[in-house]
Image 1 (cartoon, rainbow, N blue to C red):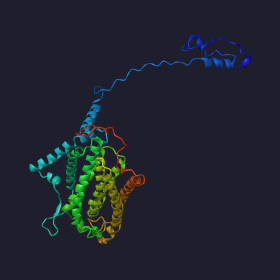
Image 2 (image 1 turned 180 degrees about the horizontal axis):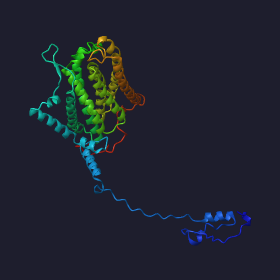
Image 3 (image 1 turned 135 degrees about the horizontal axis):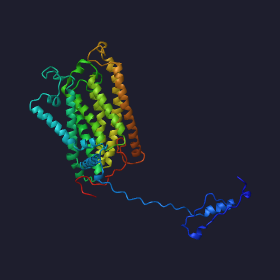
Image 4 (image 1 turned 60 degrees about the vertical axis):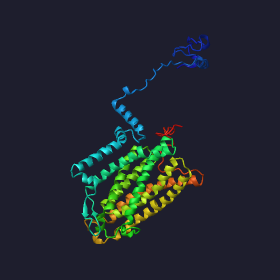
Length: 436
C-alpha cells in the first residue's frame, strides 16, 4: 500500500450531521478513504449514532388453564386443594400433593377395610391389629412373652396409617382451635403451632409409656443389666416392650413421609439423615435382640425434644420469657442426654455388650446371639453418624445462646427453623381468625 502522501485523492461526500438533521443516517462508501487521517476521524465522530429500530413485541398473553397441559392443570388444582387444607408442602410432585391432601381419607379407608375384614371373620387382619408370635402364655411365671417374626411388619404398617390419621385429625380439626383462642392471626405461626403441637403430644405420650415400661424392667437405673442373660431373656420380650418398640418404629417411619409434605426447613437434609439413622438403629437393635439397649436409647433421645417443642409453641403464640426459659432447660437436657448419656450408652454396648456375654453365647456360637465386636462396630458406625448430626445441632444451639446471653436477644432456635426468614403468607390471617 503506497504511503499516505502518494495516494491519489478520491472523491468523497462528507455530509455534516446538522445539514440534514440529527436523525438523518449518513451512508458512506466503505471503500472511500480520506487523505488526511485526522479529517477521517473527525468525519467519523460527526456521524450521528445509528438508530436501530426495534420491532414492538406483542404483549404476552396470560397463561390460562385452558392453555396448559392436563398434567399441569391437575398439579395446579392439587396445590390449590393443599392450600385450602392449610398445607405448605415440601414438593410439587403431583402424587405426593394428592396423597398429602387426602391423607386422612386414605388412612381411614385402609383402617376401615382392615377392621371390616376382621369383623367378617378373616384371619389376616389379626396381624395388623394385635401383636403376634407369642412364645409364652400370660399365665406363665414371667407373664406373656413374645418373639420377633414376619407378622410384625403388618403391625407396623397398621400403626403408620393410624399415626398419619391421628396427625391429620390433630393438624386440621383439633389443634387449630388453640391458636385461634389465643388470638394468633398469622397463618404460618398457626400452622407451625399445630405441627409442633402434634409432635410434642406424641413425644410426651410415648415418653411416658416408655418410662413406665422401663421402671418395671430389670434394667431400670442399671446399665449393666442391659446385657445380662443375653440372648435368652432378650429374645423373649414382654408385651409392653414389643408394643412400644414397634409403635416407635412406625412413628419414625411415618416421619419420612412427614418431612416431605411439610414446609422445607433449613436442616432438611440433616433431619432426613437423622430419621433414617434412627430407623436403622431401631430396626437393627430389634433384629439383633438388643431391645433393652434400644429402649433406653429412645428414651434418652426423646427427652430434650419435649422442652424444645414447648418453647416453639409458646413462641408461635407470641410469648418471650417462657420460650427463653424452656430453651435453657432444653439446652441443659440436650447436653446431658444426647451427648453425655448417649456416649455412655455407646461405651456400654462396646464393653459390657460383649464382655457380659459368655464366650459360648457370642456370635456365631449361639443361634440367637449377635454379640460380637464386628456387629457392635456396625452399631457404633451408625451411632457416630447420629452423634455427628447432634454435634452440628449443638453448634447451632450455641449460636442461639450467644445471641441470648451476649447480645441480649430472644432465643430463636436455628436447629430446625424454616427455609428463609419470610413466607408468602406471613401476613395472611389464620383460618377462622379475624383479619388484621
